[in-house]
Length: 141
Image 1: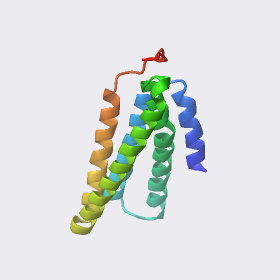
Image 2: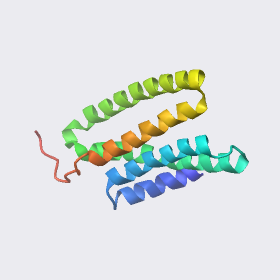
Image 3: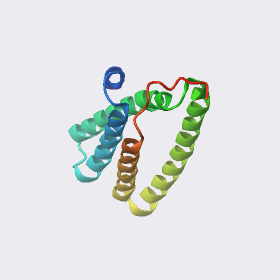
């Protein structure tokens, strides 16, 4: 329910505000979630808050990644752009899952979630560096 509501809100805000900042905010929310797992006592209320942050993050990420991607390329290149995005996401998901799993096994949950937080913060900062999308990108080039 929270995910669905936040997806709707993320789309509504994305139509009115800078998608880069919104997506970066989603990534920073995920970093906050990872840090909360490390530093907060893990009880029912804390876990509920952490899962709520996770739902908010996923709603923002799933809503805005494709939307931002569509704004960054011409209409003629949407297929290639979405395919590239999906490929990079798939490879990144596999690599990060492998690394986080190895860190969790070798060093414990704190190190694994700290690594995740660093990746989320890095991703948010990278998205903020993307030049603003030009709305007149419908050329046939």
